[in-house]
Image (cartoon, rainbow, N blue to C red; front, side, top):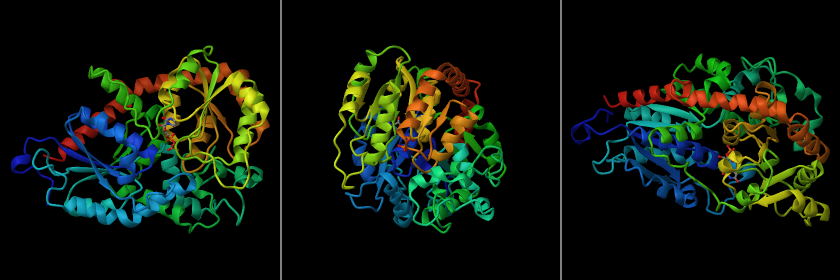
Length: 496
Ligand code: UDP
């Protein structure tokens, strides 16, 4: 079985199989990649988990405009009623690692290998979420190239790649036995600079390492898996990252040493939008939502003064305890600033025994200056003229979306790559503040005032300049634009 065109397949475009880890943030950015490929007239099969597919009914309708796009499904191996949020979202990774390999092999070795009965060639290249290495031996045996796509920042990728050295240097584990999450705040040893991640020696503290390092044992299953999976990247035919040279150039140069074939093509949502506009299709970005969007917040934003509102959202996975909820909420109300809080229906930890009655002063403060919403159209919110800043968990999609529209951030990272993203936001790009390892109303209040009032112009100006760099990267002549064209050339060469 090779990938060369034979018989009926001759003349058909390359056929790319895209397989994201079935978590919203991963699926979200890889769908942008899929649409960019469709715009370049390639055939695409998107492999989603059954669970994901059921929740993303809008994917099919959005992509119906592209005849070369198709969805295939695979089981993630978890029962339907598994929550798939908070720390337990990582069960998806361990489960897929267990069951995904076999299913993937069956799919790829099937007689038509997703060829759609002659209307498309067999899969000619796999673009795989770079934490699912079981695809590598299958692709190699079949003789088709495999490229990794990592949905995280370059800085997070590079720190993950260096976990082996971080362990050797004794800079992890970060956690003592039985310590709780907020013990990190009071540990001065976590402020020591990390020496084992090349290029980050001057500014990366131990507490900024990816959240996977917050374990008491380096043999922890997830930590080891991330370390091993990331290291495998040098075995594949290339790496795609959703970032751009002017943002993370020095780190991308470090990554190029072991992984020379690197395509930095981000921010993907903005890149896609730019290509849609040039294509004169003028469509708006796909609204791929987990929940029904709450549009009432847009009407509320319309009634607020320019550059006055803090948007609060902690993404699609973060869970808040009732104590955290109260501290954050008091901090916001006490800051005296306007805010829009997008709170996912399943984002508060249930069943911890505490009953929760919203204190009257929070009700009043929210009524006076705030608006509570469910799942919102985040990109539209961030683009609204009344927006002044974003209180975020530093998920990479959210970070890029904020950077693209020049909105400064207050970062309250929850886990995974978020702890390092927030360090880059505050210390390297200087477009916000990092609140990691604390959850205290007085600190929230101070940071909100800092970003929204005291240092507002300074943050705003730097964020505006960073947003200019995004425009430069994704438009003709820019680095992401050129790297995308280089990737398409490679994909076309796989069928020659
Ligand atoms: N998002 C949204 N509405 C919301 C909250 C989040 O559309 O109310 C989107 C947001 O625009 C982003 C994604 O969900 O694209 C969250 O991804 P991110 O990488 O920031 O965090 P994750 O959810 O993976 O932790």
